[in-house]
Image 1: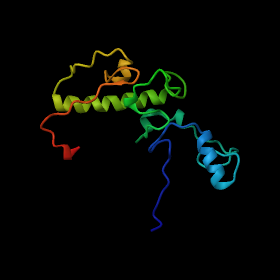
Image 2: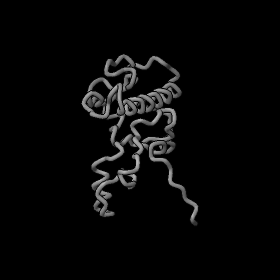
Image 3: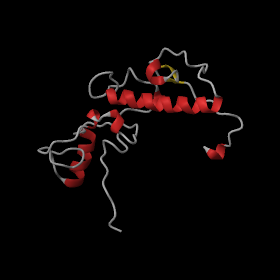
Length: 150
């Protein structure tokens, strides 16, 4: 009881949101009646923390909400994907997701030369898991893997 702590939303389960996200603020206005605030509920007179400017290496976990899902393979059509500026963090997080998937596949298959690694659709970010916008290459699971383990 009474043993809770609020974690920094930019470091834990970050969604790389804008500091004064209109959708979140509309919800808070309806809930609290305040008209000008940060997504955290602080008055706009306070400086709102901009999660888009968080150092990639400081982030513990992410939630792909505003950035979109890595398996959507829609990098060039998303306003959140930039290779410079505040939204470059989404690109880095997508790259980390695809790197984690690639690492698991290498562990399962023991090979660094998987058949789909030749994709030219943002290969540094997607590691060959996307062959076009919306064209996700599903993961191949080992036949002997116990599905209950997943």
